[in-house]
Image (tube, rainbow, N blue to C red):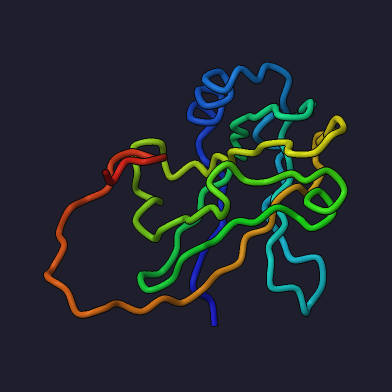
Length: 161
């Protein structure tokens, strides 16, 4: 059963978000690989880094992936560090778990998935271009009894509060 479609953002959006993150040397959008599962039994879709990032202990960055994801209502994409970076370097996501809601696809930034990471370890963390650095797993979610919510999403990080 397919519940999502992974694709790239526009070149304009990608360049805009790279600039805002202070990242100058990155892959061209056409060179970015779409996330994919490493094996037939893998739950996670590996995301590839579009740029080389060096994080000293305590450093953070927001890394635009060039990726967006159209997700059926009732499902969510959750992002986690790949275990190799988590175990070796104590790389963490700034928000612990990245939550990509189905309506994020239509956000003002085209639903561009930007990953905030921090090096909580005691040695430098180097993420090279095309390194698989986070993985996304799709989950079905259920709703509690509540009043109808008809607000529409416009922004990205923290846009619903």
